Image (tube, rainbow, N blue to C red; front, side):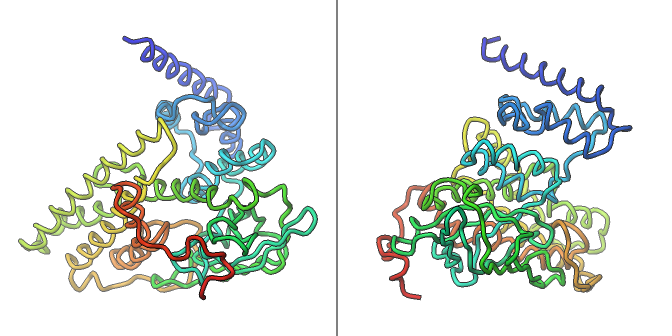
Amino acid sequence: MTSAEQRSVTSAEELRGRTRELLAAHPPASTDRLDFLRARFDAGLAWVHYPEGLGGVGAPRSLQAVVDAELEAAGAPDNDPRRIGIGLGMAAPTILKYGTEEQKQRFLRPLWVGEEVWCQLFSEPGAGSDLAALRTRAVQESDDWVINGQKVWTSSAHVARWAILIARTDPDVPKHRGITYFVCDMTDPGVEVRPLRQVTGEAEFNEVFLTDVRIPDTRRLGEVGDGWRVAQTTLNNERVAIGGMRLPREGGMIGPVSKTWRERPELRTHDLHQRLLKLWVEAEVARLTSERLRQQLVVGQPGPEGAGMKLAFARLNQEISGLDVELLGEEGLLYDDWTMRRPELVDFTGREAGYRYLRSKGNSIEGGTTEVLLNIVAERVLGLPAEPRTDKDVAWKDLAR
């Protein structure tokens, strides 16, 4: 055994010991759920690769599985990661990289525990897929920034306490260089959240109007005008969070259609069989590739490869859910409930086949449109020539709109 391997084993044993101490001091069966989660964070067992005092112990990211296995075996509660996915997958790594010590101490613990839900104020109705063309303005007044604008497709805005927000602070420079990144309090005056009812009948998305919202400069992440670079950390983590989810075999969309195939032999045809086999293999390849991507994260920050995984996630979800509806025939056309709801979390595989089919249509838009992600893969992964961009060196205020 090499010295590096020996250190890894020792670190794993130390984490097991620390986890067992947590369980002994706070037995899951008799400890309030939030109290247990707070204690877990304080013990450095929330995300072990984070620094001491911020929910971690500076251990390799791969050793998180050691802690999770111990806690799962003991019946310990989790932090309901689907409900707080934007905070965990996008806000937290951005705050860790660019936040001040005060910001890290203020935001990371309640974020991980789930006491405070986060949303993302990036997309705008006038910018389309060109996020850098955003129009929301931030003007500095003394120690505050006054924000005016509109955001759209904001998941969980109706339940969020905080938002990660990018706004234009300098219209006199090219669009990528005049953006600044902020943390916005969703309870502040001037923040208005309106539901966007989707084709599923639900309204998990929202549009958010910002009217003279005042954000103190102490809630700025990164330098003024450097918001695009900060946002890349958020976006790269977002794509990995969406496309690189850890799934068991036949997890995700392929699970329900495989179950139907096994339990309903009367629905089978040769053509459907061939299509299911093809999609099953592709889903398994995507699952294993996402596992490899997560292993790569152990030695660095997420890169453009996450765009490829998110592309695969969207395409497979849409093709598999289409096969699911077709396999069920007339039953696939039924829809259980069109009641307008504003859910706290998104369950991509929830409810019946019709819901899965309709909800999957959004997968090629949320987290970066398919068209934009194809460009990222082409340019940053495959090294193909970039598309001509005539607006690259033109001041934002001079762009045609």
